[in-house]
Image (tube, rainbow, N blue to C red; front, side, top):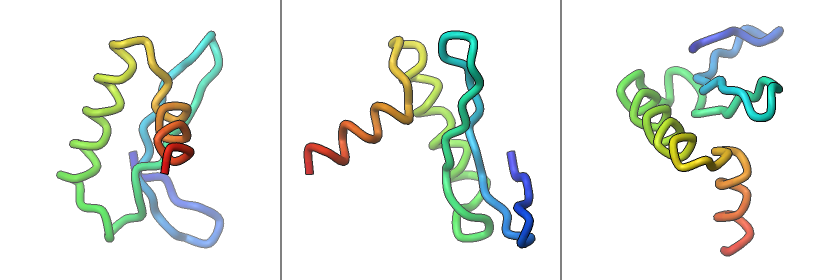
Amino acid sequence: MNPRTKTGAKSWFYRYEVGGKGRKKGLGAYPTITLEKARTAAHECRLLRQQGLDPIDYAKQLEEKR
């Protein structure tokens, strides 16, 4: 997905639901992140979802470990 912000900036997002609530994980700014890289990141998010993990919470946990 590549929605624009109020300033006209574009970003890639992975959208999903957790407990009936919609969530949106940013994958990076366009054009810094290419479509190919955004698709790869979205695929990784889908793999986490299949394991029952929330991609946003998982990324926060990884950051805390650093």
